[in-house]
Amino acid sequence: RMQQLIQRRHSSTIIMHLNQRRTAAFGLVGSQFFHPSSSFVPCHHVSLRHENNRAFTSQSTIHTSSIARSSYYSNKNNFRNSILQSFSTTNDDIASPEESFATTYHAPVMWRECIDALLDCERSRTRKDARNSSDDNDDNNNNNDRLIFVDGTLGGGGHSNALLERLEGGDIVLGCDVDADALEAASKRLQKYTTGDESHPLFVTVKSNFCDLDSTLLNAMHPVTKEPIFGSAAQIDGILLDLGVSSYQIDTAERGFAFMKDGPLDMRMNSDPSSSGPTAADLCNTFDARELQRILRVYGDEPRAKVISNAICDNRPLSTTGDLVEAVSSVTPQFAKKSKRMGRTATLARVFQSLRIVVNNEDKVLECVLSETCPKI
Image 1: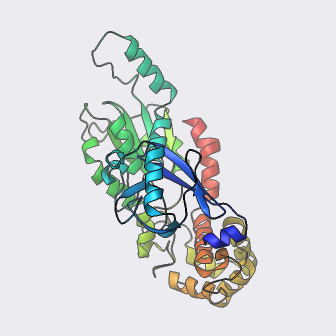
Image 2: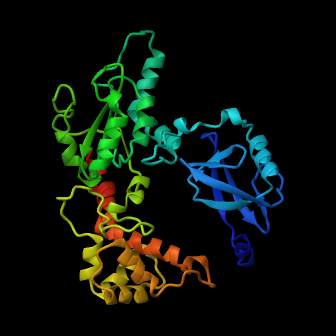
């Protein structure tokens, strides 16, 4: 892959998070890795593996990032030492897996940056300034200065967990998701924040699509007092949206998100069996070739959109992910000489992504939450 990039005169950038606080951008130029604050490092092969959102060498952790299982090129010792010396980092400084808030359900990315951005809201700064300038050491936390945040894509609760650890008693985090499995997993994980203990911030789950938050938040109830959290209008200090699918959804064959595992061709974010809305199988079996071609081109930038859409129509009916994989594979080579992007794995990823976006109406939902919901709350 490296030689291909060199031959095509392309550069590739890898973002590596050191100690979850420092970030280095490494670029591939010619046949050497570089970064702005160190000399060039000779390139040799070193294998890295991905586990719990952390990258390891055979000896020790050198960085954390959302990096797929792959291989990178550098002299192992020189590469590692260069990173540690340039950023004054030692092995003891690097965050442990517990500090990354990753679980088997999902590993939240950029959690530190996200939480810092949320806590930089106006009311948070005002509250901090007021308490710093006051000589009164009494607890000033009340309903007037409490902070309220929304995790609009709760998932495994990683971002919510990180946020709750930074908040004070009386503050509230509302975790929203359409997936009942996500709500259950996050509720168990964050149980200590649901008891109503005033020394801890409060965590409340809300089953809702984030584009409907302006109406569903008004129905959010305190888990202990059973009273509405909001009055006539919801007033939120910050909203976090982590778009896409979670590791759990991909790893669960029954959800139909992954082409690596055979399961029902579903792809609906809402795991409730009684939920309405078309599945990916409905799209593949009812849309004509022209509409399928449009979907693959618009939402997947698929160069073989026409050929693949015809193959889907020719292999109807499709009911499982395996059926869709077989249809796509019939017109896609396992490996492509032209580029890796034209290979079967990359093509399947684009096809599944395109169908998932349409099944869940993701583009319209995102437009709605940014242009309508957020301004209201």
